[in-house]
Image (cartoon, rainbow, N blue to C red; front, side, top):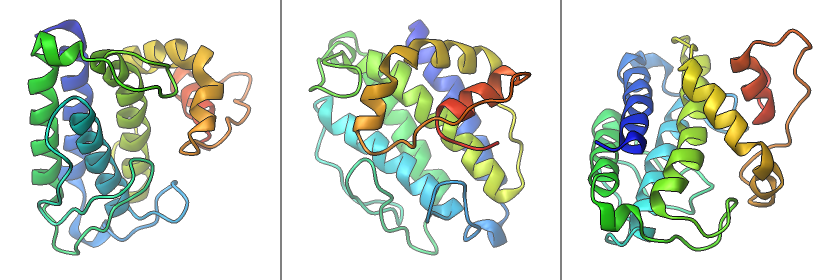
Length: 197
């Protein structure tokens, strides 16, 4: 795999591990994302993957595994009996297929918070931001493991610093909050994304 595909796979596997570890009675627990439950967080990540895959030249997003379709910044309808692990596994596998196909990975995306960039660049930065942030959100909501990949946190945080204004303009991100002076890298990153760890 390419370095980008490998980085994506590690983060996706970390998210999937949190999905699989979620107790059945915690899916309706509130998450750090305003108005979203743990179930909504996973639905949002699945839906966002589907949106990127559509922009990469795949088919239009379609509901599957009990997870609906909506705008990429929102959370779709998720059935109470949705198979969230299967929904995310399918999205992850489709994304890896794009990232390991040089032509599809290099396809330019329309303007976004990074400007016009290839699919693989968007996945490597915005995708990493989404997976890291929502891995933490899901873990916080469900009492799971909140630790994130330290290398991915540092790399993603540094790479996104120049794009903070663009991220805020999407309306999908809260303004950053001041990190404590002695914050570790994960805490600093989460504060950058508007979370309050």
